[in-house]
Length: 138
Image 1 (cartoon, one colour):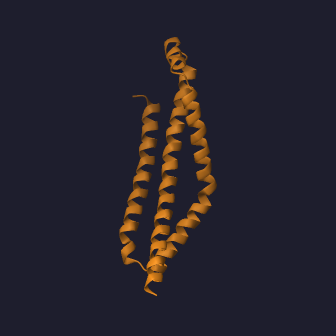
Image 2 (spheres, one colour):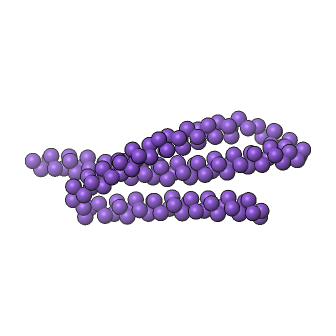
Image 3 (tube, one colour):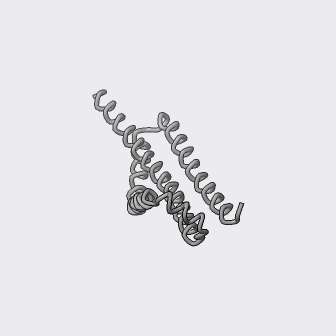
């Protein structure tokens, strides 16, 4: 494989490890919930909301970029790519490869953002359930 492919796959691997760590962190956090007080859960929820609020603009940019990239990818004609290959239009093929790599990186970054949103949503659901249970006991 070429150095470019090696570098790209290493970068994706590293990013996927970040995703894996976030999922493990979320799982561990959820497993610990039954041992926490309502105040601790609310504190964790407030922290998750603050994190999301601070990253909202960044996440929105990822979503917009991914949408644009998807539309570009969909508009790319297979016949054009085949013609570029047969005509050895290296610059066009390299540009296509760069865009594809950027699309993959953006998709992974958005997956991290989605995990963070899932964590906040899960904590919000748990806090809401605890509120309902506390009200039922009164």
